[in-house]
Image (cartoon, rainbow, N blue to C red; front, top):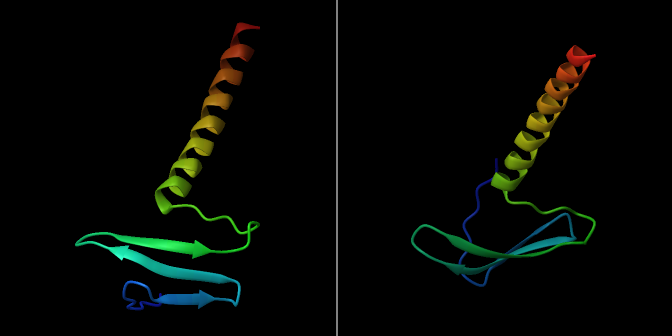
Length: 73
């Protein structure tokens, strides 16, 4: 993991096509502007984790529903 220190208004570039700029900071938060190509997905980590949990839950629920249907036949 790379840890960098940036101040308000400073940027960093990743792979020549993604730029992150520090827009504002607070005592326990930072606001970033992300300039990246549209084909690169950008998700907050908590949303990515929630999506993975939802996928697992839907797979489990689908299997349970299928098992119940098969029992009724």
